[in-house]
Length: 271
Ligand code: SAM
Image 1 (spheres, rainbow, N blue to C red):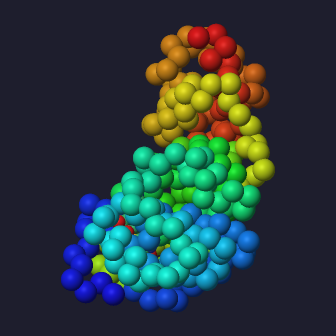
Image 2 (cartoon, rainbow, N blue to C red; image 1 turned 135 degrees about the vertical axis):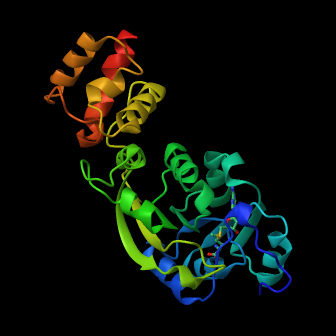
């Protein structure tokens, strides 16, 4: 299937070499026969084939134009698949899902290109599309981060940023040897089950993002000192932190995201 095709490092092209793992991803992703599935980066189509069998309709977005004719040849005559040659980051996901999936519940499934994992995840969650589940293969370390609890050493700004949108769990690990070429690190598949509505919504997204970034920028700093970078009035900050029943010397990574959101709202209201 990959004859004559040179895999491109710049697109994170580490392809799964057997059907076993793609079959397991599709089986554990919550996709049911009435679902539409958005796949990001079909590559040579190993996961795509499983998604087509599991779902009513599959839309696969691939950045590499050289792969499109190969995918078209592999899936010729298959009407459950729409291939789109595009960079997922350039796609209006609301428009795409309304146009392609109309009334279907929509899941996302992907073996993500590792160079762009976080931007893709944030784009999916911030799109406002009510995906049912998002099941993705990521680097094992990233999976650990995504599944960690507030206050634990692996907990980071991405974990906090996503927590209002979905619950998350690791499905299984995948060894580097399952890919061609093998990446330098092992991988894991994680599944997000999205809440009907986000658990909380900041008054201003930009201020909340700035608070999250600052809170996690230097992990040894207290929240008070970290937030000084975006809001210099220390006395007012102290009051905002105390109003959340937090100790004055609390560190950013120990603060639940909804409290960071409340602090962001207070900063926004006086800015
Ligand atoms: N799904 C295949 C598999 O499991 O073997 C390929 C996975 S490979 C890790 C990532 C795929 O995403 C590649 O096919 C790559 O060309 C594609 N890709 C990389 N960046 C992309 C982007 N910005 N938009 C869409 N596809 C992208």
